[in-house]
Length: 239
Length: 205
Image (cartoon, rainbow over all chains, first blue to last red):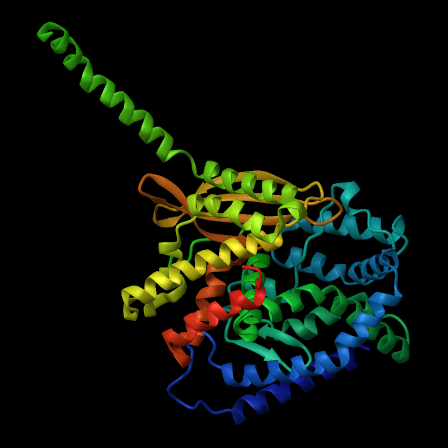
């Protein structure tokens, strides 16, 4: 399972490198903030088209057919299975106390919470945290690098690329079950994620002048906020 | 008369000073007060909700927005280095459009009340003399929304120049979007697109 996950991630990375090399800079109109903009915009259009024709209708059907409490339970199971990613990266970032808190939360949800079906977080005083390997690299001092939109995988950055295979390794879902089970569960997880993103995607398309830029900026700022654990420095140089 | 006048005239500077001081205190205020005023206005239109209708909510929140925001700075930052290249008329139009966008989006988004409250979290110094007021919008049965405001002192009053919702800065979003359009399509096209966006999003406006 890990081998296969690593394979597909590497496959996408290889494809990206090939495509990036093919899109040599046209000079002039390059935004220094987004050097691969023309490649990214192409991928954005591809992903948006695929989403509108395939993923959005499936997610919409899922949301209609599955009652809200069931969807919440499904989400919590996947979230709990992936929680070791947060735990491991808390420790890697030196946030020991938080790592222990999160380990406690994971154990609590896995046992009393029936493998994550029930999420007790609001009652226990153990808030949910969100850490991953790309944030760890940021804390370790790695520069962010260029923004990238990948086919199927969506927005990331140069620094985010190693996180793709790394976060798969710390997700329990990668390790359990047969190959078929993996595909099915992976599919359900993606559909649930897409359903949750629905209002954000509608907001992006409805209220922006340029949905590509809106998504890029919202993504980069959200990542920055996560790296600073919800308290990013708010003044930018141009204010 | 002269004696009375001389007594009054001695008091005059004191009372003027008194008036001036209290005026300064009222004007200077506290950045948290500006944010509280905005939130109070938003609660008002939420609670007025459907009865007010979009037009009613709009006319109620407009003066609150006018008192709380600094659209001069917002427009300048949103347009970036293209601000210098704009004519005075274009600059004025940018200010008006951004003002309208802000008012309309509040009137649209804060349209009903389900027990929401705003909670003050903290007030801090920012760089370049700015103040940052952190708050939360608490909703029933939903995750709270982190709302952080960046304020600037303008003519003795603290005014909002940026709203950061859940870590995403509205001003930075606009700066990035507008910058791309300004670079590729020019000032006139951008202003037209913003006007069209307002009409598309808020047809009742």
